[in-house]
Image (cartoon, rainbow, N blue to C red; front, side, top):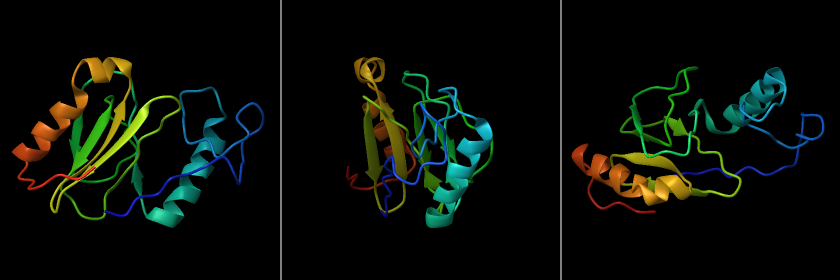
Length: 133
């Protein structure tokens, strides 16, 4: 499974967000965040983001849309659909099998409420074989 990690270089945002900010929820100018996301999409193709809430819910998607599901994990069986997970002090967990991939935002509450296990169970329900992290 190809994956991309971003860093703070090539910033478009002004201080205090002067980094390659991809998050709409931190107070940065949404237009600048949109430009950062567009730059990322030029490298990866369209990317599906989620409205992460430090919970244990997930969304199964089959295409990239501008709607950000409110959840802490995205799962897809559709080739070419790029999934995003944003983290600061939480854990980005990327899972893949031959037929299913997932991007999981694992915070303290999600960890306590078994988000990783729930995502793995859903991946298996969707027909995954061996799952790799």
